[in-house]
Length: 301
Image 1 (tube, rainbow, N blue to C red):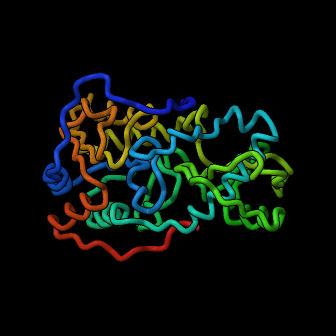
Image 2: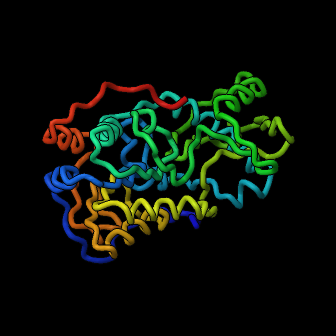
């Protein structure tokens, strides 16, 4: 279960130092059957901030919890006003070199799968297939009463119609698509209901305090069992939802490789951590493998 996050994570033990040599990643991909586990750090070069890196949003922003969202209409008004504004930014985001590299590795048969902790849809926009959205995706909406799903773009249109002229300037946009707005900026923002039953709508993402669906977790565990290597890209592994797969791989004797500029909670389980920006590191890896990267692809929307 994802609980309310702490504002930061700092290593409490001696961790292996990072390297700037991506050769271990090249070697692993050359062997094939690499499972990718990506986090918010892979999307920072697309203009979406991460939670815990330099300038990470948790220093100023606490993500919405499931308990708060379901607990009252005012919390939902605040969430949807902020998320509606943030969605405009997410809708303009484009895959970066890191996303395109992962997609290229998949097309060349080097990956056994992709699990992402992100909700931005940029792996799919870059061309990756069969991506497991561990925490869901912001491009879908679910009704908490009848369980029906609908596209986020449809909800965005309805919210635009119900809130003509709404366009405050946000202080920042966060990795969960939530914009930083004051209560005064939220004002009397109007929330719309499910068109099927009139129930409460929620983005199809796992909020903090909400459990990842068990069948999704088990599917990810199966992917770890089937892979020969686990490659972590841009995740601090602070929360257990991603760290558990690193622990599973390490316990099974499968090499774990991490590409992340800062130390992570999973470093002691890894054979190496490459302390480089994702885009340049994966572009270098692709070059050494002789794999060209596609041009920029359209983002989610």
